[in-house]
Image (cartoon, rainbow, N blue to C red; front, side, top):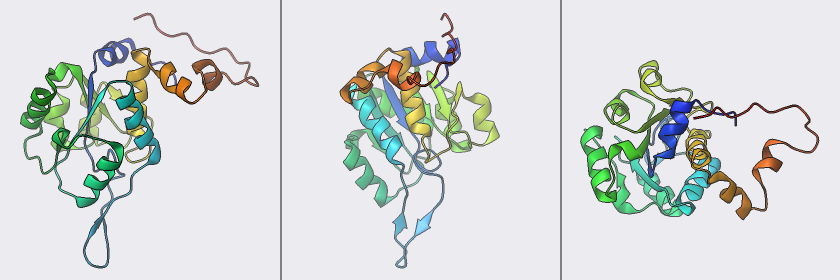
Length: 201
């Protein structure tokens, strides 16, 4: 991953919780229905790994969604996201961001919010770090500090979390658990091209 701007890195260093929308962020935004009308959702394993890595490094992960979907509860249970940090059916994401902040004892400035569409704007505007997938609507991309290279449901959540953990100097700890190092991952032995230097923030 290339180095982020100084503003993004500075904001990411303050993050203590990551708040995720669902449709278009944890999923690709598609809505699937079974033959009996049941709702189905597709989630990316890489995003799940990112969420578990965040939790292991002491970051809180919360969910703030405008829809209510049964499959989401199963996926979040698999990932160990605490029920009190999950709000579905939100009609006021700014107020519900305050609810999550109060539950965690944090200020919205200490939270990263990841959204992709117009209903996410009130929460994104108040977040310390506002982020969105590459395929977010233009209105969202304009207000976000971080626009991911990955699209919704295809690694955007992992990208945001990795950005935060790198900024806080904790990504190396994630790699060490799996017997890797930052140097090995970013500069394989066969690669000899010079890497760009990080900005001085």
